[in-house]
Amino acid sequence: MNNRRRMTGVVTSNKMTKTVVVEITRKFRHPLYKKVVYSSARVKAHDEIGCQIGDQVQIVETRPLSRDKRWAVETIVKRETRTADQGVGE
Image (cartoon, rainbow, N blue to C red):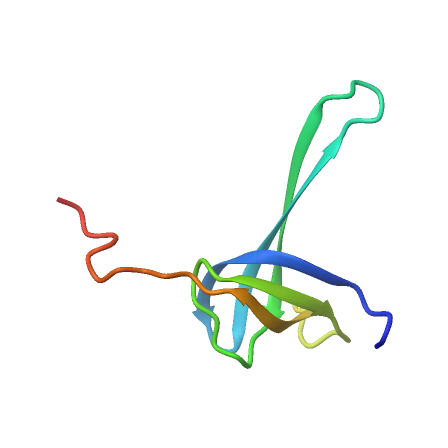
């Protein structure tokens, strides 16, 4: 296996062609104040698989594919199950 960085995140947008926005969240303890801090970053990733919003995916670092894309979707860890009536305001 190669030594490229791999991270897991959740797909938040798939409106672009062959591109998804992945939100990576991490939780760590602050070194001085010892409080748990949540940090998140949103990156654009190249998608040949066809991810949906809410899918948990593993992304891998690649060469620059465009101005913003430096990641590619490697695998879908967990698919989001959506019902037909979800999102309808009542």
